[in-house]
Amino acid sequence: MAKAIHTMIRVIDEARSIDFYTRAFGLEVAQRLDFETFTLIYLSNTDTPFEVELTVNKGRQEPYALGDGYGHLAVSVADLDSEHDRLGALGFNPKKIVEFNRDGSLIARFFFIEDPDGYKIEVLQRGGRFQ
Image 1 (cartoon, rainbow, N blue to C red):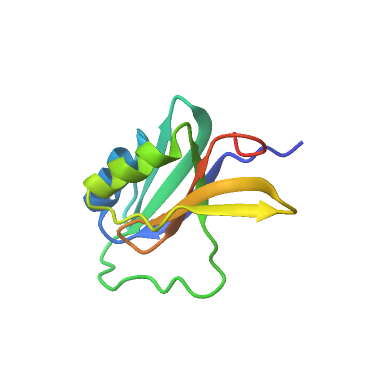
Image 2 (image 1 turned 90 degrees about the vertical axis):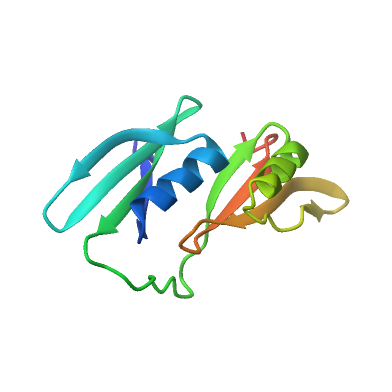
């Protein structure tokens, strides 16, 4: 069976992106691979083996066009309200908390936040299918 192991996003400023993912989601650098024209930085934490791979193309100055095909990365947290408050206090401007219901049943509580390069990240209350 295939096993999801990481997602990759291209970023402009390595330090700024690492700072964001560390402060926002507790991800730390697991490995950094430096090549002549690009650098790969793998971020992870002890809660899951899944990693976020940041790719920095050396010499790139202009922001990436995310296009209309990119969706979002999703993370789950134990206490959505306190994470919303914490991320707001860090100046990361989380969007409003949304409750997603179907047929009178709560499916999910979540909000979105954007990283320094404009990638959307969904932060979900842990529970049900969102563990």
